[in-house]
Image (cartoon, rainbow, N blue to C red; front, side, top):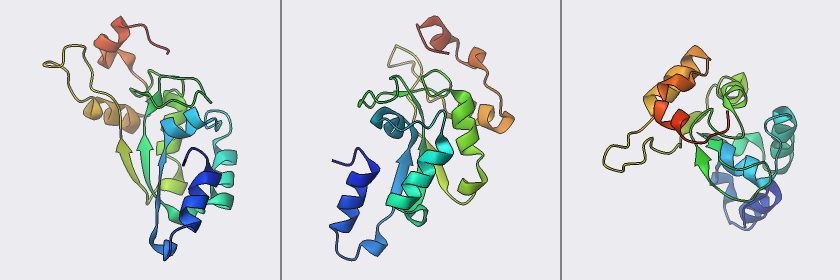
Length: 148
């Protein structure tokens, strides 16, 4: 339950005093649920607004996906190293519609060795600030088989 906008609306409708409920929009979850955020983000947001309401949107979880659109999985990828891609995520992060919405990176640590793995957030934020994808900042990810 909660895989589609309609299912989220059903949950909201089933709660007393639901005017206090808000929603987090997760880019990987939305992509993997089958919504075409890559080619029709404005259409997806129009549908979200019609079914749930943009007024309920309080947080964006920003992450790429290891899976194709509609896979119904939830495997987050580092920014620019997945099927959604940096350009789409960059447009979402910088969309004026979300100027007053909190954005949280929810990407995997980098490195196969758990003792040496590190949080990539500083480098991912720097790429968003520069609005430029730089895969070279993650040589560990370039060494793996990834989708660019």
